[in-house]
Image (cartoon, rainbow, N blue to C red; front, side, top):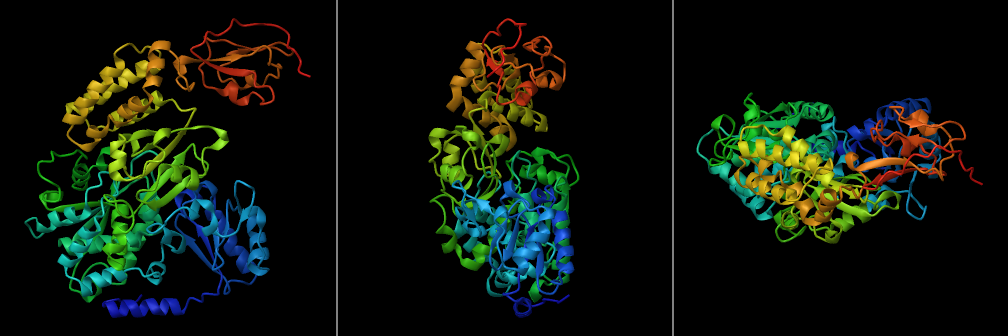
Length: 635
C-alpha cells in the first residue's frame, strides 16, 4: 500500500494507476448495487469470471463490480467499456453469448439492448433516454468505480479536492467558496451548508464534530444508500474537507442498520483511506488529523432529525431537542456539531475542483447545482435520476421516467417522503427547486419521488403517510403524538365509509396546531400529505364523505366485487383462487360472490381471464342480487 503523505505523492500515484490501465483494453462493468443484487447480479458476475477464464481472456478483459447505475427497472446492468455497450436485464445464462459474441467477435446482441418506444435498439448507455435526459454530476462516477477499490476513485481524480484544500487553501478561503456556491442541504430542509459550517467553525470550543446523515427513512428513497454503496470515497472526501474548515478532528457516519452493503463498503473505504494516509494522523502531510466512525441507526425515522440523530450517537434514545440552541453550537456531547446529508457532502469535492461559479451556473436563483431523486411508483422507468435544479416534473416523469405504464393517466407525484406533499397534474410544468416545492405544499425531502396514476386514492395515500408518521413519532411532545393520531382516526373513518360533514375542516384545524407547536420537523411537516391532498383533491374527500364512494376503487369498505352473469364463463378459476371460499358456482353455472364472506382482497379480479373480464369492482353502487343461472357461452 502506498503512503500518500504529500499532494505530490498522491498525483504521482494517480499517474501510475492511469499508466497501467490500457484504454483499449475492454472493461466489463456490472452493477452490484442492492437493486441489481436482488436480481442476481452476484451470480452474473461469478458466471462472467468463470466464462472469461474458460475462454482464455483473463489477461485481456477487466471486470469491475460497480455501484448502482441508476436504471433499477432494467437491472442487472452490464456496460462494456470503452465502447459504452449497455446490456440490460442480464441473466447468468446470457454470459456465454456475451463473451463469445461481444468480447471475442465484437458483435452486438440485440435482444439485450434497450428498446425505445418505437422498438428501436439503442446500443450505448449514454444514448438511452433515461440517461440521456439527465445531468449526472454527482452520481455519474458510480458506474466507473469499484467501491471496494480506492484506486478507481483516485484514478478519476479522487482526493484532488482534498489535496487542494489542505495544500493551497486556508479554511477561511474554502468556507468562502462553499458560501459563494450557495449549496443547500440535500436532506430536506435546504438550509445553506456554508452558513451551517460557519456557525460550527465560529462556535466556542476546541472539540467539534462533523456528521454524515445517512439515516434515509423516507419510503421510496434510496439515493443516499446508493451513493454510499457505490462511491463512499466521494462522500468521505467531502467530509474531510468540511472537518478541516470547521476544525473538527472526529466524524461520524450515521447510517441505517438496514443498509448492510453501504455499511460494508463504507467500512472498507475507511480502512483503505487510513492505509493511504488520507485519513487519520497528518493527512497528506498537512498536519491535519481526522478520523471517522460508523454509527448504525436502529431504524427510527425520527433519528433522521439532526438533534435526535446526535442523541442517538450519544447512545441514548433518538429524541429531538428544543431548537433554541442550534446543534452547530451544541450538538454531540454539547459540542459544536455539523450535520449534512450524504448527497451534500458528495457535492463538496466538485465545488472545490470546479469552483463556486461553475456550481452556481447550474440550477435556479435560489437552488443551485443538481439534485438526485429516487423515481419510483407508477412510472415506466424507475431508478435514480440526477437533474439540474429547476428541471420540471414533466421532464423527470415523462422524458426520463418514460411516462405512466399501461396507458393510465398521471394523477399526482408525492415528493419529500411522508413529510412531503402530493403535486397534481396541473403543476407538472413546475420547476423543481426548494422554494417552488414549498409553495406547492410539498418539500424536497431526501429525494423520494413517488408517481401515482388514476388508480390511486388520494385520501388513502394521506392515511398511509399519517399511519407511518404516527408509528414513527417519538411521542415526546403532545402536538405531534396526539395530533397525528387524531388526524389518522379521522382519515380511517373517512376511508371506512363513516366520514361526516366537518371532517375536512377538522383535519385542517388539527394540522395547523401540529405544524405550529410540534417540537421537531417530523411533527411540523407531518400534516403536509393531508393538507396538500385536500388542497388539490378536495373533491375526493367530499365523495368519500357524502357519497360513501371511493372514485379510485381503493378503500375496501367502499368497494365490492361482483361477477357479471352476462360475462361469466364458469371457468372456476376465481372460485379456486379465492382465499376465503367466498365464491360459489358449478360447471356451466354463473359464479356468485358471497358479500358477507368477501374480504375484498381483489384476487378474483386479478385471476379472471382477460378475455372474459367477468369480475367488476363496484364503488358506492348497490351490488345486484346474485343470479344462479346457466352461463351464456360466448361465441
